[in-house]
Amino acid sequence: MSRVFLAQEVRLGRQVVVKVLPPEMAAGVSAERFEREIQLAAKLQHPHIVPLLTAGANGDLLYYIMPRVEGQSLRARLVQEHELPIGEAVRILRDVCDALAYAHAHGIVHRDVKPDNVLLSGKHALVTDFGVAKAVAQSTGSTALTSLGVALGTPAYMAPEQAAADPGTDQRADIYAVGALGYEMIAGRPPFIGPSPSSVLAQHVSSPPDPVSKYRATTPPALAALIHRCLEKRPADRFQSANEILEQLEPMTTPSGGSAAYSATAWVPAQPAHPARVAGVFALASLVVLAVAYGLMHELGLPS
Image (cartoon, rainbow, N blue to C red; front, side, top):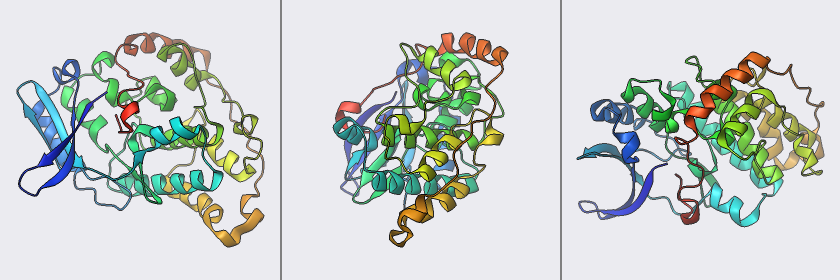
């Protein structure tokens, strides 16, 4: 969604990444409120979070700046390898949840967790673009979906309540996105695919995902159960915090855990969504088809 540029900071001589909002989105954004929200998110300081340095406006352009991180995006890695080794996928999930737990404790929900916004540097994963979705949403002062493509998220990783534009969306939307992220790393594809963004959004609301083990039979039962619990339709049926996921992941990342670390009861899905909610999301999704972008900057290996 954003245009990404590599730049040199003159005063300190370091390389930074500059992200510029699309003009059609920036046109509806209050620059002052956008900068204020970015500055709030810039207070996040954590080993698994790429910090925001500043934000600003230049004419009709709105931008934000972050340090350059050596490595590649998880999206670029998935394009190269399709699926990841299970141990590596677990470690990435752990780092992502560690970042989310910290941000949630400070009152910041990401709202757009996806492979493009996860950077792999060395043996660690870092989450980028914290606060950007909220900055756009808050600064527009509007709930028009065509103006909030970034704020709503990305269809393949969007929680049902986000797809339905629920104003009560909270940190559990990030939990859902963690499930979608884990699913793709293991299965080599997102939990839902379709011919259009609206069809994908409708599946998030109404359709259960195929068992991840259908695409990878060697998936440990505990990991499959964790992923599918994150992907529950109702927020109340998911893990309620990133810390809860971390507790489940810890035995899987402990070498001494052995096969016992992967033992778990089978995942049992909750009841499907009500048909009325499905109809509602179809109506809403038709408005965001043009507002949501899938693949910007994928070829550069940079988060979009």
